[in-house]
Each structure stands twice: as structure tokens, then as C-alpha cells.
Image 1 (cartoon, one colour):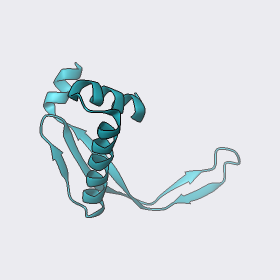
Image 2 (cartoon, helix red, strand yellow):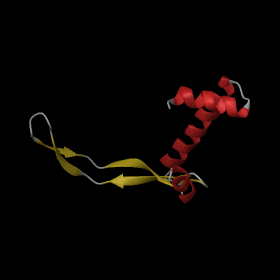
Image 3 (cartoon, one colour):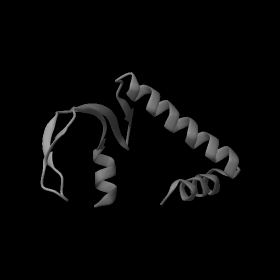
Image 4 (cartoon, one colour):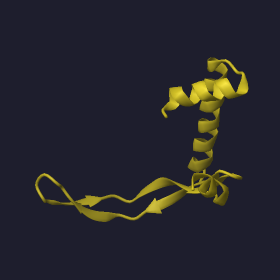
Length: 90
């Protein structure tokens, strides 16, 4: 499912227009992104938690040449699913 599919599904299940559904989804993603930039956790009960984690610097290899390269440390978004979501999938 891509973003357009998600917009269509939300519009169909909420009786919103596709434009309104797209605005709601865009706003939701923007709020989550803004919270993660501030290093806040975003907890969606029954779905899961988004949070920022620090990935350490590491050493890798260029697959083409085999040459060693340094991979810089970075902040990454992590998602941990809730027990309810895990149960719904199994």
C-alpha cells in the first residue's frame, strides 16, 4: 500500500473527500515528524511507538571494490509495535 492507496482507504472508511483525507494524513505525518525532531516519543495506544534512536558509527565495505568505508553515526526513527498490533497480525 502506498500513500495514495492509504488516502483512498481513509477517505472511504471515514466518508471524507480524498483531499480532506490527504490533508489529515499529511498533518498526522508532519506532527509525528516534528515530535521526533524534538526527541519526543509518539505513543499510539493499540498501534505502537515511534522514537528516535542513535545509530553508532561503524565500518563497512564498498560492495563493488571491497574497500573499507566509515559509516557516520546518525539519528534514526524506530517503531515498536504494540502487543495488540502484534496479536492482530498473528
